Image 1 (cartoon, rainbow, N blue to C red):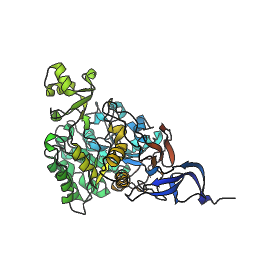
Image 2: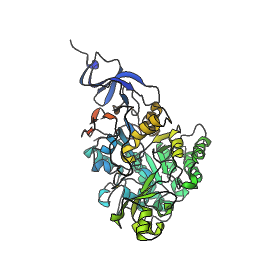
Image 3: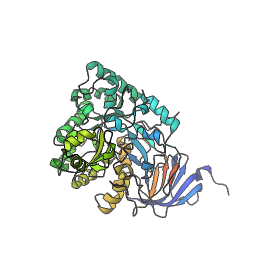
Image 4: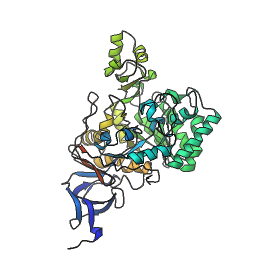
Length: 489
């Protein structure tokens, strides 16, 4: 018996518990993949396929979208992207917190926090087009969409980052941003809490608003502070929407520092105050600890600070700052100064605040992992399974359908990644098959590079990138623009 070509597929997943990514209740059905796309949903027993998988009730969701990464150079360095594929992530957003690999021109070592991305020699992309071309030659197991970092632009045109930009420097940065968005970037990110961007006044940031408005591009921001003046910092971010009508996304929303524990409802009320038509949203990671370079302004004895690396004293890494200070018989601040430059994990968040922010209906999930860190925060390997296992299944702060929506359909909609994030005929076959009863993060602060449990299979654009804990070198990821198109060769 001959089968119509429409009744054949490359892969059919039978009897899956399908979560569409929109937050709807799951449905049991079969899913057919042909080429890069989902071609059929429903009862497909009459179809033929080269590969058949019996899901037997395992959950099938859209591939997870990590909206907050620093994977800019990691994609080229380690294209298998094991830390992401092993937890079901099939798309990453790069260029967050004001730092991006492109368009970048370095004449000296990468300044803080650009040094979180890699070494000076790795920054070889003077234009966004150069980065896209390099990705399309190298390929990776995940899709990527890129933001342009404000600190990166500052470093391109300024001889001193510890001051406001001049009008001529702003004009040069505007031109570079406009060019990068034209070439395929999603928009602009800022990292205003960092020393090398703190001196940029609000007027400097708003100078980019017209460029973003012209392209209907995104603005994401690591707020000027996440500590005591966090509400004022949020006002500064929301002003970009009010003045230019652009979408604003607040990065890793949190109440940082012991003084601010319990203030999550105040932060969420700020979103409500923008009105029902506001496009503002946020992302968060599912941990009560942050991670970045060692910031002298954050040194405190209110909570543990774990040193992950130190250029000046590498032997002191993987210890608490308080223990190092005792060994040296100096104050915490003196020890931190002596370790510089260094990296740290700050256990400065409150679990109740984390729960409240994660459950907020505008919150997407982002890992904020640092792949270059020799002792990374466990979020690099565990963020998405932790949301599904710990926060949804164990803590019950939201349903599994809602948890999946926060890392798929909601993210695709906010970042305007067309035909992704939702299981639908015609959409790209970015998919993850997992066991809802087993999925959990295994990475810990002591042993942070452990793969999660419960992920059975992952597909990126229809190609298998993980089968039963084995990462496959499919390298089927695409560079995505905000229009959903891919920038291919």
